[in-house]
Length: 243
Image 1 (cartoon, rainbow, N blue to C red):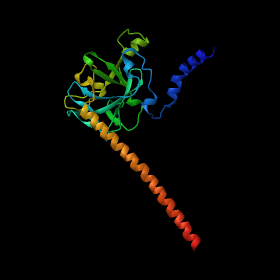
Image 2 (image 1 turned 90 degrees about the horizontal axis):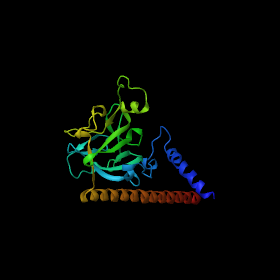
Image 3 (image 1 turned 120 degrees about the vertical axis):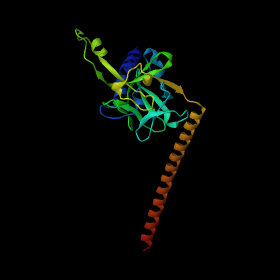
Image 4 (image 1 turned 135 degrees about the vertical axis):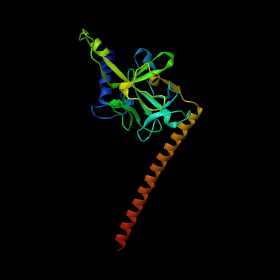
């Protein structure tokens, strides 16, 4: 008789446990924070493993994240810096990470896009699906506060409508636009998430093989060095006893 109430209690505690992974003011892996259930209508596809996509802007540029922290657009069809991992951190909210750069797309309080080495609140973007398959990505925490119209009242709904969101945007020259200059209807703010092609998958495979080789070399190199140190230590002790 106690099994069902216990399951209900655990389901209620699950969001609390998930939030505990990310204490305020500390960075964390967004995969630990996502709502794995992916509930929320059109956002059900956000649950589960990260999606690997290339974000193709309506201005004909692929969004790319550089290892040095720079954000811009590329006209190259097969550019490793354009391969992204999109991970849900909440219902309708995602983190976008450059697979090859290892950095997260972020927007600061000045509306500038940058690439962060660690995940933080500026890396959270509200993903909205628009017609023709294009998406927009708006900063979750930064926006423009607009004055309410005369006689607008003070309801929460009217206050929410007074905020103008700041969007990820790549202009016709491949440069990021400041968030406060963007609109959801601008071509520069519309992105088509493209699935990876064969050449993209090949680049990902080579990256994975390279990382595995580095890990293997580091692991076995460390073990060899430890064995050498132990051998030198035993040899030194033997010489001391002989003296």
